[in-house]
Structures are given as C-alpha cells and as structure tokens.
Image (cartoon, rainbow, N blue to C red; front, side):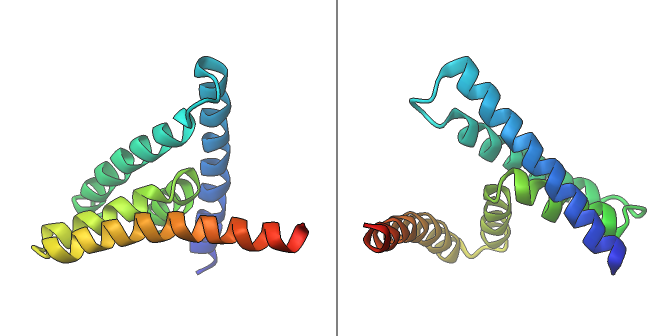
Length: 127
C-alpha cells in the first residue's frame, strides 16, 4: 500500500514538473496567445496513456506501483485529459457509443461551465 502511494506521489511530482517544463517551453517558443502547452500535454499525455495501457496489458511483470506511477501519478499530474480520453475509449470500445458521446460532451461542456461558475462565484466574493 505505501509503495503504491509513494509511486503515485513521485509520479505526480515528476508529471507536474514535466507539465511546467512544457508550458514554459511552449510559451517561450510560440508565445502565450494560444495555450499550446496545454494542447501539447493533453495530446501527448493521451497518446502515452493509450500506449501504456496496451503495454501493461501485455506485461506480466509490471507491478502495481509501476502502473500507478505512470498512469495515476505521472500522467495524472501531466494531464488529466489522458484519463478522460481513456475513459471515453473504454466506453466507446465496449460498444456504448451513445454513452461515450454523452460522457465526452458532458465532461467538456460541464467542466468549462463549472470553471466559469467558479470564476463568477469567486469574483463575487472578492469584489
């Protein structure tokens, strides 16, 4: 149990540092008019999540600590979009296309609306 928690913590710290590095680098290279860093970590993180899930499914020797280091820890901090993408793909691949589409649309739309709600609430409190 502790090794799993430690693996998640170390993976999370590593992923957060990697995300920061991508954000800083992309801002330096392309400016800040478009969130290139976020797009990059979301796309790259989703690709890595897909690759790891297949790799882990075919590896007998990957420990639970190794799996959560990369998935929950590193990718969870690098980008939560990778987990969203995996959830969508899992639902889609089991044939529940309607549920998958509802999940995708509701996740994106509700998350953006929730962010605006949070902005509105906090702006009201600090004004």
